[in-house]
Each structure stands twice: as C-alpha cells, then as structure tokens.
Image 1 (cartoon, rainbow, N blue to C red):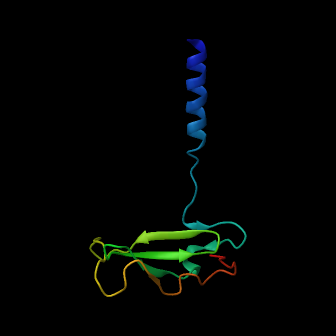
Image 2 (cartoon, helix red, strand yellow):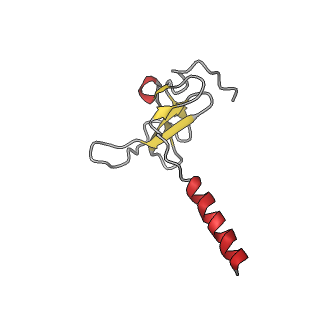
Image 3 (cartoon, rainbow, N blue to C red):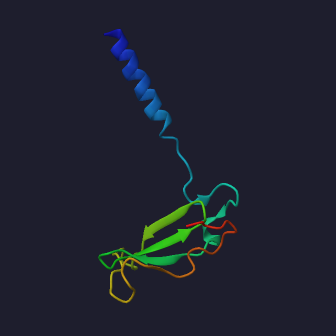
Length: 97
C-alpha cells in the first residue's frame, strides 16, 4: 500500500511541475519580441467564423476574432478554410511549410 501511495504522490508532484506558469503574451526563442510586433492575418474556419492568425516560423498563434460586444465575427466575406493577410510577416525565420 505504501508503494502505491508513493507512486501516486510522485505522479501528483510531476503533474504540478508541468503546470509552470508561462507568459503567453511574449514571443520567445531565437527572434524573441513582443507579439505586437508580429503581423496578423485572418483565417476563416469551415463554419465561416474568423480567427486572428500569426505564423512566426517556429511558433504560431491563433485566437478567435470578436466584435466589440464579444461575439465571434462570422460572415461569408472571405473564403472558408483559407488564411489571408500578412500573417507570415514580422519574423526573419523562414517557415518551411
């Protein structure tokens, strides 16, 4: 029984270590910069709702586009399943894909 409790305690401590708080508002790594320096484009999901998209070469960022009332922006003005705009600009790292 002590062995099972020890394993459970070790697993719990390992799980807590994985919950380390990180600042997700900053770009990290080789060309670290504030996210406001990156250029966003718009990706439209299959249902027609728009999302802000940024491709930094190694990292990518995506968040749903909201109107001023907090509701998702969804319409048929852009093609579905396509990203438009300068979303790959703002970084010197080339995206191989």
